[in-house]
Image (cartoon, rainbow, N blue to C red; front, side):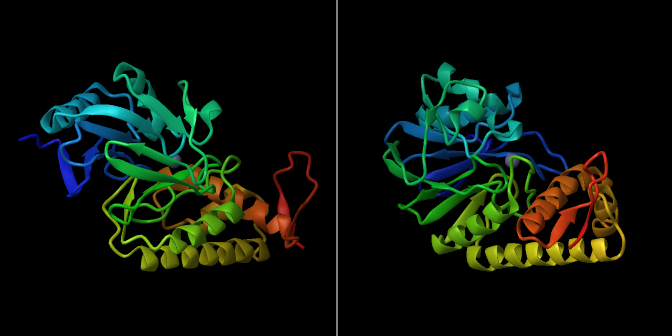
Length: 274
Ligand SMILES: [Zn+2]
């Protein structure tokens, strides 16, 4: 019995990568998708290029007597995609929304495309916001959505400005809600059993953060760094650089809406309420 992989349902197993951090929670979840007895799996997010993780994934493959038919990246961030090169070594195809962003030759998997491998149909749903190339992957056989870094198993995610976009992110949350998934399998953290409630919480969290950013500006903060120190004062300082990306994403959205303007300082850092 291979203990490196955990079965989540009849077609999905997860292997946790040993890359825990404040950003990645317990580590990156690498998913293996495949119908029983087909002898193939699709690997979603091979994760960090670590020997111990590769051994764990390959032990799970051996345990299932399965070969890798395809590797799919939810997005290009290194904690999900650094091991993309394993696809070629496994003789598998590699798929991503924006091949130019990933480190290896990949085939474009565009919104609405269906990958038919390992006895399954896996539907690509473009959900930009966390990153421009983010995909959620819907598995109709189980009504589950693999949510990557769009929605995590715990806490909230980063809108990684400038590649990430807050208005896109909010639209992608609404799109995820419309999929009506019974569960989300996130890129980090545990399974989300109540997707509707969690997506509603994420939307409320973003509204709250936007209100806090506006309040910080009203209180006299003028730079993203000042806003982070006020709004994220209770958070682990290790998360502040990521928080600053989300604050910048908030400010870009508010500027696009005409509610915030640049102050015209030489560094282009300062902003204020309109
Ligand atoms: Zn990411």
